[in-house]
Length: 278
Ligand code: PXL
Image 1 (cartoon, rainbow, N blue to C red):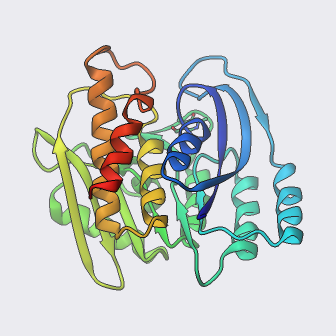
Image 2: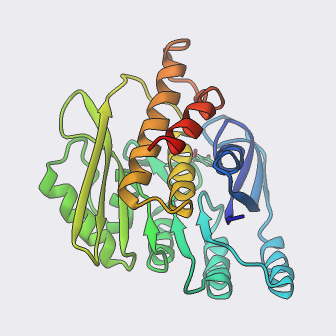
């Protein structure tokens, strides 16, 4: 059985990070090993959330796993709580990256032009350094802007997005996926760049006029799962965009306000079908 290790927080309520990565990657038939980086009562968009930092455990878990000689088909990182954790992961990558696996980094830091509570430019600079060690990175436009020290704009031309993708790949990773891309009013999707093949790819779906929290984590979990299941980058992106679209639409039908979390659970059968009938 294939095995991914995902390293991100547990937000106990809020349908993001590990509470979506675990069920989605497992549903795709892949063993999901985890390193929880922190335990929060909710994600940071709620007020008065608790935050227990689990940094101390990271090197201990790493040491034990090294003794056991565990191997992973992918190392997938998401929300990280501190610069200290970013630095720990550089060492984790050294220990567990092999010729046969890939490092997949979602530099979770912000959205809609703003960093999430607790992050600043310094954190974004350190996250950019972590991204330099990745094989594939998945920033949204906010995260890309902070990592590249560029102004966040609401609208972008295709040329501007291509330039951003190339600049991000110059940080180090061979493949870059930019999420939240839109060139027309009624469409939303992703654009990717494969540096070695000098190939761009876009995939869009009809825009649903509402934003929910946690969809980025659902998207990344699905992409990394599809890649580990030997799909091409293009196929993995199509599967993930289609799945996220279904989860948003399902949620939109019953609650139109911008609340947290989508009904990704209802659409797990769709995901499995989608994988089996590519
Ligand atoms: O979905 C991204 C995310 C993950 N983890 C925590 C968060 C957020 C976004 O706000 O706060 C703790």
